Length: 190
Image (cartoon, rainbow, N blue to C red; front, side, top):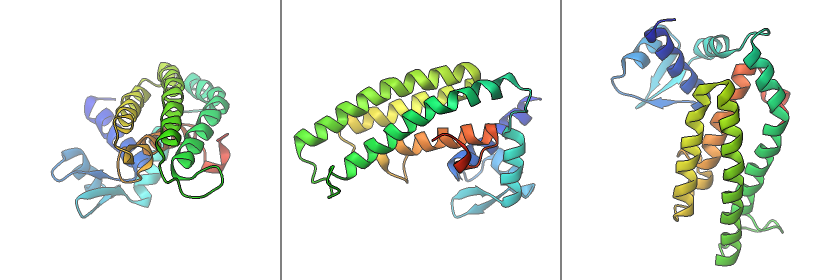
């Protein structure tokens, strides 16, 4: 695979995991649009159904690929961490009794401490995954950026669906793993 094919596959993977990319004059995005794999919607590019099929085929690790076996073995541990991420985000939004979090300093500080512990564990897991799939290392950086911003006071960086928040980046990683293993959301262990 030459550099242009590799770059195309990276952009295809980003579109498949993130749902859209912004890009006005990006030649790789333009090529995907010209091939019918993506369309422009405002200032974003999204996959077509044909593009989603192409992404699934391009990203899927074959049955004999040792990376597939390694990632499949890893899924149950990923599932445990995934539940912790979801529980933490819920804790930021709701008190244990289900009422909205009024953001009392002590309660919020406890949630932040939980994120720090979770983040240490997440980095360990992502670096382990990156040993199998090196491109996954990017998620460690994105998670760290979101964690740092949240701990510095940007509360949207925990669970905002429209920013590269901790939860959003985690979901990108989750989707990346599912695509590489050919799993529907209900097929994995999370």
